[in-house]
Length: 180
Image 1: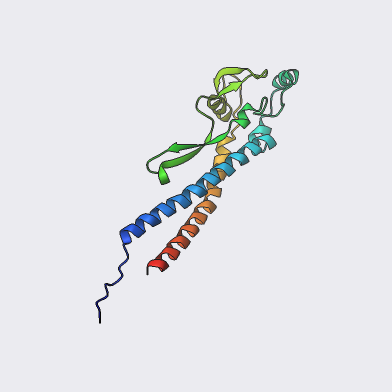
Image 2: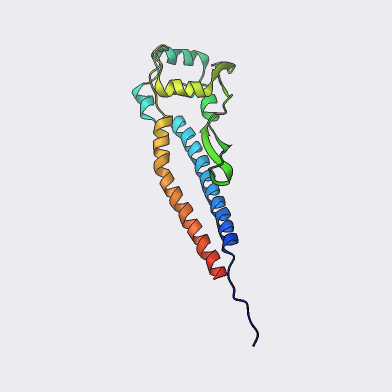
């Protein structure tokens, strides 16, 4: 009878593999969620879904100016630059899975356009802040849309976290069965 070396799995290697797989799964789900949310946010603006857009409609003077310029009369849309510039950005972050973090917003250097389509000196992120919080000096009422969308996004993220957990557990179970 020959001595047979017992099979002892290399748990360090298995743990490293499972960590990588879990990060890959999380990254895939989070990126898809971010893209879906960005598109949903753009569509919500186009549909004028935000209460603040209806609570504080455009002033008659602003509507008349928009009509004369031949631009879109809806809130936050005029030239479509604002809506069309909302994107998902992947940023580096050492604490996030695979060193990535996703942000929905504007490119930091993206500038607004006037009614004729000319690029202005105002950053789109500044336009967003002004409209989100209002400006007393410019007589612009607060029309929150980023904040309300973010609140809904946080609620919807619960389902994404559950899907990630479920898929990671399935992978762990499948891999453990192979080695045990």
